[in-house]
Image (cartoon, rainbow, N blue to C red; front, side, top):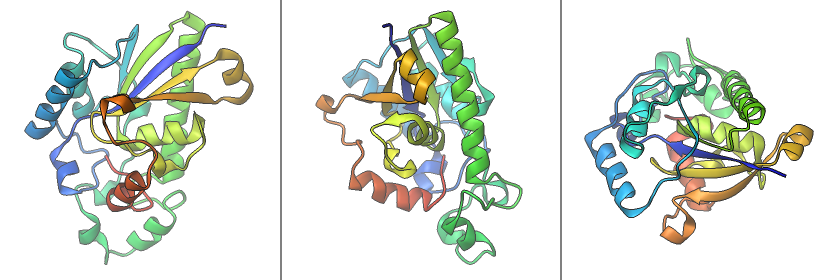
Length: 230
């Protein structure tokens, strides 16, 4: 039976990432350092090609596509945007720790939303709806491969909802410019809506340490707490 491959890639580094800020709806470009890092990865590793390319509408994702895939015009999918942190956009956890409601959000981000922002549950429902529509479109058209360039929280939502082996949301944290490859078998997808996590991007053999490890959990705790970051 025909299988389908989707490569999930996190955008390059932004100044907000570097400073540890909550950046979701803020439309930051890539940092100069982020562009350099992506170019170094391209020299060391050939990123997977695909029949179709999708991207979040945010600058940091669209610019990542142009560095990794020069000349490609991706299909923009609004539902792949990062979570909106509302009034807490651009702030760090240290700046917010005494702000009313912040600790409650950290303890239960699925149900609690930042002021004028999204709850984790609303965010994950939006991302999953977009991803399911994307997969169903690929199956209908017979499109065998795709690349998705999006955000850390977006990728973690997809992988924690559909990825096999099963892992928690923040276990799937990956570095900027890195990600995972999903293999979708139509029968298994239609029956159980799951996809095999087949490989890391870059592959493990390339020496990149960004699999589901305690190191990733610690990084997620620092960057995301119980929430999500850009």
